[in-house]
Image (cartoon, rainbow, N blue to C red; front, side):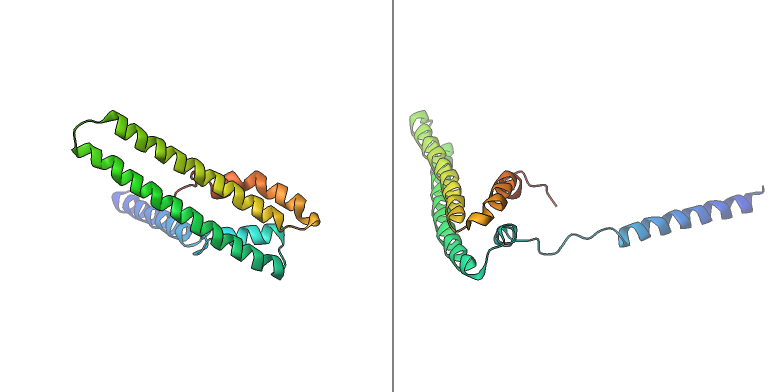
Length: 149
């Protein structure tokens, strides 16, 4: 095999490998642009009727208001805490703020739990099996350990 045939073979192999790579990128499964919202996931999983969806909408609004208020409180406490970084060391004051932050985090978790209790209350008896199945997935659906895109 002379040099020219060898170079042609290498060029053809490179072109084929590039074509395979490009084909692979063009035909990879695409993630949906808009993943389902928690509302859609829960409504579908529990097969809510229109009346239940109306009740669920009001439950969602109430939950969002509560969570937003708690998160604002957390942000305020964090601002107070980090302001101490520029001041003289005050362990007792920072400990109290950290304790307040922990209480707010606990309140958020309790609010989430109560939210799902409210959702359970609008389920019909024939939806309870679906609700139990959904409960087993909640930590994966709404946890903070979601994979990064």
